Amino acid sequence: GLELRNAGTPERFVQNEVEVLIVRGIIANISDRERPVPTMKLVLLDRDKAVVQEKQAPPPVTALDPGGTAGFRIILERPDPNAVEVNVLFVDPNEPPK
Image (cartoon, rainbow, N blue to C red; front, side):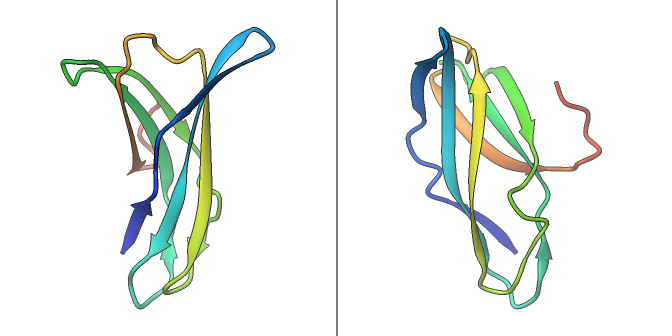
């Protein structure tokens, strides 16, 4: 019942001499009932589609009403230089971070 939208081009910049990657987007409840919003995970992949880095992030809200939306932002310091693709997904909050 939840959909990730507009997880567009990541922004990279240097802050306090540390490279930072920011990914923004919108979580939308496309169902007809309130939905809990699970933990989110940012996944960086290399050219071979292998995972080179991951980061779990708390959702911006705990639940969304039917048709509701919420913006999210995930910040990752020192992104892997081999990363060429970025994915954002929902995960089981009990899954251990890597």
